[in-house]
Length: 78
Image (cartoon, rainbow, N blue to C red; front, side, top):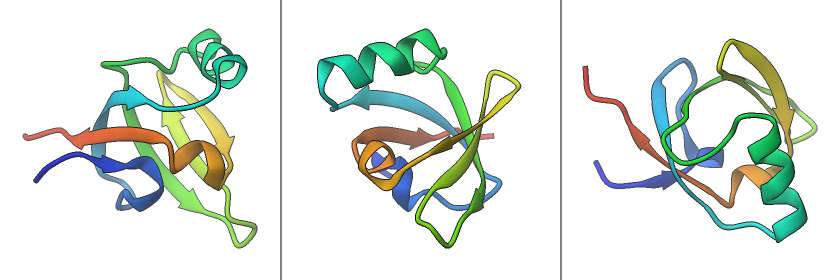
């Protein structure tokens, strides 16, 4: 499987962040939260509002569609 964006990820699967294609202030904020290339990520829930609840480095974060659509991930092979 090739790279997909975080918005299209399946629930409860393990992925790794490959690239972030966002404006500089947003990408810096994500980096401050620990989201950068190579970071493991798992989508826990999809909210009706369009937000995703993701688990990153043991922390749960809510991220909107604009952000998750611009984070490229790759599935972790077990």
